[in-house]
Length: 285
Length: 290
Image (tube, rainbow over all chains, first blue to last red; front, top):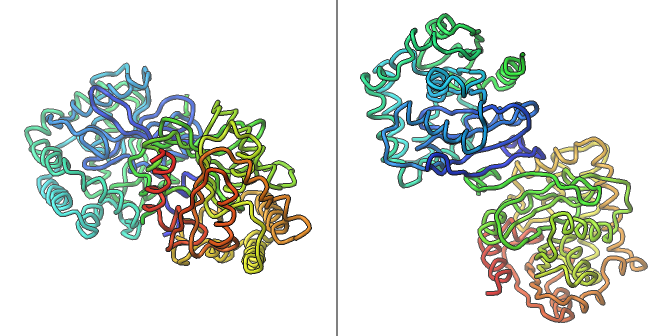
């Protein structure tokens, strides 16, 4: 493994830092100048989700990738990890950074949170990019069971094997599960509060009635005014791209881009194409 | 040991550039408190302190810089003698507004620190000479430096290869396996910048050339300078150090008014990389006056 994360950041101005956002100590990566773009990772994830996107996007934008509340190295308060709790945290982060409005790019859970903000706080969201996003219909019980099991197993017994098993559904090409990605998630899942948090993040919040409360129904999607790019992959383990087209059909100003030969992390597995499409969309007037 | 990202995981750090009197200077910067400047060796770059920045950031405002001509800093047309590096660091201290700073240098970085402390005693709070001191080479040391000059030529020639870079970096280590694939890739990328390999070649020819040239060695290894160093100084050495032996470093330590010496057993020219736990502990104890 020679092309490590540091090699991608070599010589590139960036900052890894923390800031209080709504009482939550929040880790973030920041790079570039220009209009603000906020990157939101998936359930049980962390900002390294975007590690192949931060530098390319920083060529034209002021990029922030953050660890959402309860995730990564951010604070892990005893709260209900609802979609609105994540959204409030993101809103507090923007306020703390002095960013009045930003484009939001969210993958999986992050997409749900980003879309929820575009629906509930429209003045905050300039443009929206949804990447294999959850939320427009309940995650099927069979998928919930699998992700819950692998996530709990990974935090209860942090090992290379348990972490690899947790990361597998993210990639079509399993060779992309590098030692470095495994090590990063091991360090994060080893934090003592992680078991408690994961029970909430992967437990109560994935019950059907809770998902229903924050579901991105057609009515809610129709109220999203921000220009929206929906990207999906051909091999997403949660939802087919044909079904996901519901976002495009219901969000008024929206377009759809399909990324081939990748699973739940198209932003990583097809980073170059993803970066090009997202840059073009965000830069367009 | 993991990758550099894993070593720095969750730490506050930034990679940024400062203008040091016209020289755009890459810096890895972390922490708050009194300033501490880390200086790398000949042909090196700030990443040589990847395993030390986080530990020191708990107590200091750490700046690991790329020397002029090196890494991602500017490479103007200079002779690339030691005084060019002394001037660069002096300007850098002005740039960050540090009236005084602790300076810790490895190899060329240590020699630069020693010259700086001798020339500008009011600017250096504490000094660490990590495997580099202003003492002329003895016979064995000359052979080591002639060897690294050959390796440097191969690693900065027209045909830049990862294998050549690896061979050059193995010279630094007691255990060749300490040269990770990532380190090789980093140096390969740095040397692959347009025109950079030629600068690295010039730096190696100049500094290593002077080191083994009895007529000119005093331009670099002027032991009289050691007597002028006013600040507390740690001479941090290793049993397997190429170029300058433990015995030579002991002689040099005696010339420095307020110096003590420590010798690491399991590393060669990069103790901060091969023995990071011990380095971070002893180095911090010294800087904190413990």
